[in-house]
Length: 323
Image: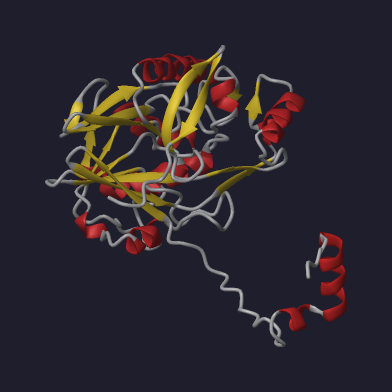
């Protein structure tokens, strides 16, 4: 005998019998929600070096209207919505690569530290490092792209003592001089100056100033990218014929400031100079197909940029879960 069972009759049968009957007479067990997330680090190989990306946690900027300027705010919100991002709250990441060359352990940028100027989700770099099995005392070099709060805030701890006791700290002298200038304490830059002084002055005897084009550590070359700050730099990181560019704050957002690279960003010291640096260096990176890591792009911030019309497009690199 052949029985024809339609989808409608199966649904009716299920409704009549109930889920417990269809599943053998007993209800499914309800597993408790775990409420935890994966550790905030990721590791990959670069030539002979091992790179561990650690996070300082998400940094919410809020409504983009007053932050991303030079383009109508309706267009900014439309760009975000079209990429399935919130048009009302731009959230940046804080991705710091730690490069183990075999001889040196080099950390790029240190997060917000104890400052909660952008909310409670920042300041977890030390926790991320512990999750990744990296001890602060093993860091040989701390490289600062510039001296804004979210890049130098984790050089000292709550007790104002250095968190990386065996590290030299590398920064452009122009940025050090600008952001530790006590004369700016009465200006709108006061909060930035306070935190730069708090974090950089205790390690003043360990500061090393690099220059544009200088390979100041093995496999690490400084490239000037002024505008965001006077001494903002990006870095070419190389090992055994492989390279990536750590962009620092060349671009804060992978849609807005790539698709419209001449858009201005309110935290830039010189927005027009920052835009010129952004276009010039992104063109070089795209033309040479050099991988990039951005401090503020979506976790873990590693991928490629390609020319797209008058701007650029970011292509995230899939995370490799085996080394």
